[in-house]
Length: 145
Image (cartoon, rainbow, N blue to C red):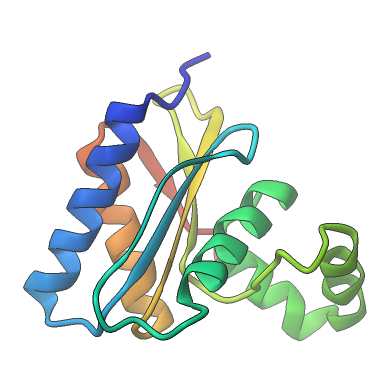
């Protein structure tokens, strides 16, 4: 199985932020986790609100914890609110079930990490994460509607 190197995580981070700047997005926070859930890289742009980093982490950590992109978690939150509430408690509150938490899959489909981005619309957050993951040579998995 492929592992997520620091260099690849840095590529994801820098490309995601570049995507945000080219798109004119609001200031962003980005967190890249490896397959264990450990932070590989994280950054918050000047002007982000105080807790954006924690929101970005919660998107990535929630996706990684349940093995599905946060778009799928968003759908489950609407359909099974009690389940998402319980899981949020189990993971210590580090679960943000809205789009912007994208699993990183290697070319064989194995999950090797996750990216969480927060600061603009959920759709823009998710698109920036996908751009970074793709630039690093991996496959983004945002979940499904």
